[in-house]
Image 1 (cartoon, rainbow, N blue to C red):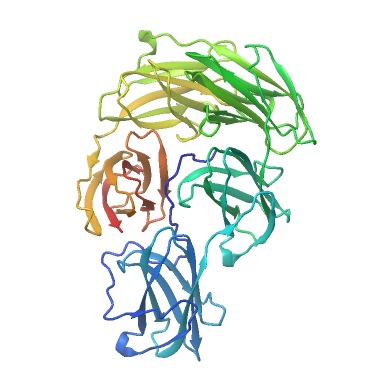
Image 2 (cartoon, rainbow, N blue to C red; image 1 turned 30 degrees about the vertical axis):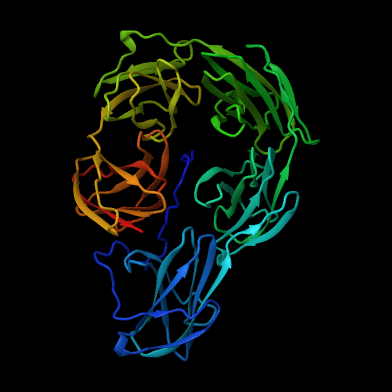
Length: 570
């Protein structure tokens, strides 16, 4: 399973083993040069007087891409490194990747207006001459409704392509990425107009290794679309955006299957309106009659945009099943076929009982309960828990047998969905970290594979979060903290609008850290990283949205130790 979440961040992963990260202090040059302009070759020389290195400064604009290249003269062997304006945060590195032998070349896409620094040095520390050229181009090709675009993945485009699309009022859009080469596997991601905030993503939701996203545009929205090659392989593909009419059926009676068929004539999805149902726990199922079908169920809010729940393969016989407590007057359910196959399925809505509070279901801090799924008895378990204000908790199922648990947490009073998880725990267990002001929680645990087996359920209380009260006019913050064995630490940071935060966890002792970024109440995951920083540290970059966020650092190796939390703020 893939990690999900409404991301507002972009992680920077350092894949080149020669990249130096986690520097303790900035490299401030004695002097630097300003670029005279884009697309102009600028001659310079590397000598002992400048320690065989040059520094250049230039400004980038949000939404634009930049190609930076050195063209050596003679036997000069150039190395190219790109930094943030602080001379500290390394963005990329290249040696010998240029179009001319011994030259270097980098590509950079800007998500914000900023100043960057280029360092050019001679690989062997020898004197020599070179030319530097930086070209600027708009990152996004404009997509037009109804047109198909053929393009090619290659290493020079970083195996991805970008488009910008302006929708009309109330359009039902379908975005498709089709692999022309059977070896190409596409991944499509839909962003808001900032090119950062992810709306939806799909891999293999079209036929075969193709990708597809459906989205309703209520007003004239601007969308950014990225199409990637999943395995970084070269090859051609096609991309298109089309509008489509949808037919919405009335809600069928409870417990009565409704037969529908996917066909080659365009019936690739079906919609139902769920109206007038209040305070009911419902289960929506799509049960294939043909083995080759692979269905997916999605539950939408009344605007047909906000996704309340989604399931693929959670039902029997390759079907889908989605449970939800309904407290909205109007919702919509969509059933689609994942791979474009034809065949019939039954759509079923069941009304499920709501669990009653009793002492047997109550769980307390550090209490470990053991439960067993049985074919002839329990297929689900409910637990209740009373959290305390400002505390965060870890709810975890640990599987004993070969089972796969799914955990959902509700507000016990309103039965509003708070959190959901499948497979974030060890093995095929589930794990949710949560901070909430809800008075009492209902925790629901089911078995994903519909088999018998036992599991432990436990609730742990995390340390109170440390609120980072820092002067954000300063560009850096650094402080050391301690992690107990296999524990977590949490920090709350007010992420101001327009500021970019590079968050780095640097182990001081021999510990292995992961970094997860949540909304303040920990109900929405913003980003995640493990081992992209120095050694076994973690590193993540995000754009502030004007709301507090929670940084959770977890120790994975089973050791206790210290770490440094470092923030670079731009």
